[in-house]
Length: 98
Image (tube, rainbow, N blue to C red; front, side, top):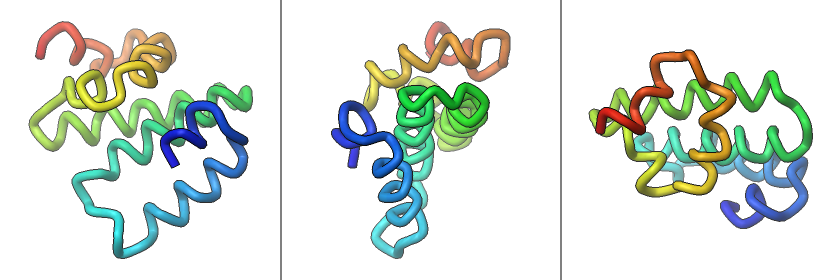
């Protein structure tokens, strides 16, 4: 699904990521990553509002786990691309403080 979100059909990525997030196979500690990949796919399909909301939720989810820099560790390219969308939001500082 990560490859689909990064370079495949962003609409299909959204459908699959939503389905996975709702499944019992998705661990709660991975929710931030699903949100980040959904944000990336939303950005790729030109939905800036959804991309921003999902990116904020993803960065906040990682911060709630106690590792605010986690998106830059696990999904660096996605996190860096989305960082501009969350500029000015407190979650944007995580890259520089962790």
